[in-house]
Structure formats: structure tokens, C-alpha cells
Image (cartoon, rainbow, N blue to C red; front, side):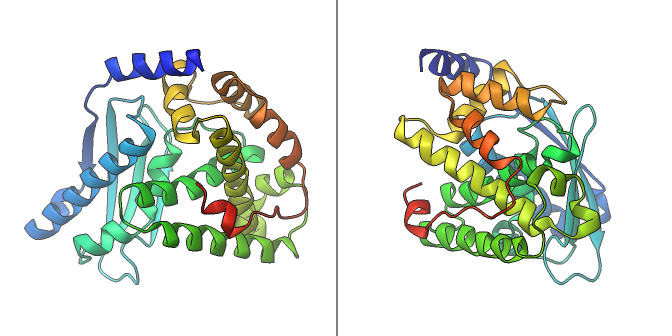
Length: 266
């Protein structure tokens, strides 16, 4: 625990404002520019309130405004570079309220707190982002605790359903999930991994968010193996929580069971 709190204290001393660089903002109307820049700035602040400041000092956001869209952010992806950025395909006419309630940007920003993994470990990165998007939205008041529980439970149900037809070992399926259309099982099994880790950390008086904050300072690299990442989290938490769960999850073929009652304790 001493190591963790020392790192978090040092982290607080090294905080510097993140510069958000929004590309193609001028392709929007004046009102659209105001709406989108406000939404992005607020989303970054909400994410940092939960996970702490990003290690990088500049965050490029690449806008792809759409004239016809059925949701505020129909598609987005992380752009791994130096620095890492986010590409957002957006409805140019969406309101600030609609953007704020959309989960996508919180998901993509969460990815930036973890390094790039090999494809076989993408269940970790997608699971972390799928869990953390809901934590960030709950922590910032975008959704309620009841909605937090409901959204996670709904995701787990989708993952459980797909597990009936996509039953390969998780690491193997993760490497081929796009070809197989297995995102539901891969994303949400990974999310349960981090829910279970967070539950175990709570028993020690810690949280996953605290561990990830400390990880930014001591250990975050551009790329990492899954094993190195897991080892770092165990070191920071002074536990074997992550190693034990990783050994259980990496080759599992079923979908784990976490009740709504347990989720509600987070």
C-alpha cells in the first residue's frame, strides 16, 4: 500500500494540463464547433476525474463529421502514434446533451490509459474500456448507480449469449474476433475480468482506478505484453489478484458469472 500511495502522491505533484488538439473542428458550423469542443473537453475532464491525468501531454482528436447518422457517435477508434489520439465519426447536428450521454468517447479515452497489447490480449484492453466507460459515466453523474448496474448486466448477458456459439479459448478468440464477429463475448468477458479485479481490490481498501493512476506513473509504456501488464498491476496492488484472474481467464471457454448484487457494491 505504501508504494501505491507514494506513487499517487508523486503523481499529484506532476500533473500538467492536457492539451486537446481537435482536428477538422472548423468543418462544423459555429454552433457545432462550440458543442463538440465543449463535449470533448468535458469528457476528458470526467475521464481524468476517475482515472487521473493521462501520461501524454497532448491529445489529438480527429473528427469525421457525418451528415447522416443514427446516433451521436456512430464509430470511433484509437489512433496509436506519438502521441496517441482518438478518431471520432460524429453526427454534426447532435446536441451537447446527446453527445454527453453517448458512451463512445469515454470508452476510447479509457483505452489510452493502457498500452497497446498483442491481438491475443485485446480482451484486456476492450474489457477495461467497456467496464471503465460505465464507471466514468457513473462517477460523473451521466448515469445513476442503478443504470450502471443495468448497463453492465446487459453487456454481460450479450456476452453470455454469444459464448454459446463462440466458445474458443478467450485469447485465441480475441486474436480473431473481427473475422468471427465475436466482439460481444471478447469485450464483455474482459469487462467481467476487471469487475472481479475491482471487487477483490475493494476488499483490500483499494480500487482499480487507483491502481491505473499509479500505473501511469511507474509503468505505462507504448506497448506491452499481457503478462508484463498483469505483473505491474499485482506489484502496485501488492497482491496476486491480477495474476490469479489472468490465469483463470486467458484460456476460458465459458462466460463468467457476476450477479447484479455484486456489481452494485462497486
